[in-house]
Length: 112
Length: 110
Image (tube, rainbow over all chains, first blue to last red; front, side, top):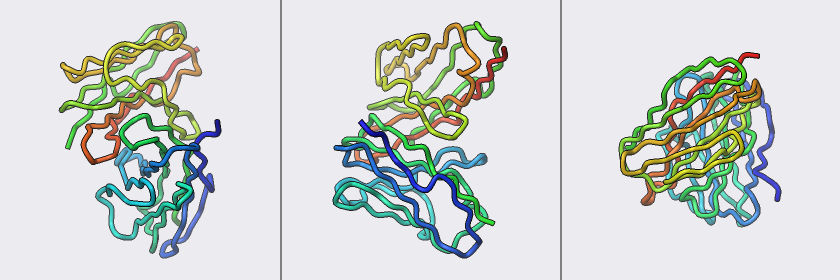
């Protein structure tokens, strides 16, 4: 079966702009979560959605938001980009959100 | 929250050598996964192992949940095994997230 698909793979944005990243989970998986990976902070949890409801959110500013659609696809949005938002953003899907996560290839965002 | 510590942070091996990576966690967990991050950034799931022992080819993993640690064994290492290995845990309840260790950077030289 198809894996977790993230688009786009690479993005270059300017400070102050906003960006939207997309994630399509494995068919049948209803939980989608997002992580940010930076050299300094490692892998940090952003948020998790299940059946269109956000069940948990990490310690990130309100500029980071997300949503999930009825087909379980998810998007995350970052507004008013800062240089520090440059990172690899990883999406993971799970059938229940309680383990057994599969990750996508990630979106590498560079803010200039 | 739960803390996850991995050791060693860096490991350099010659091709053909064996290695053991360790993951300690500070509280009981419902699930534990080992990942290998490839050069393009994707996290490849190696094992889903909340307890017990599993083997997949040259790799095997053991989790001793009562003592709060997990081990990843790599035998007869190959250059393609190079990369960062992460341990991640799900502590249960309603947090619905993985907590990651900082990883072990493995370099296998030919």
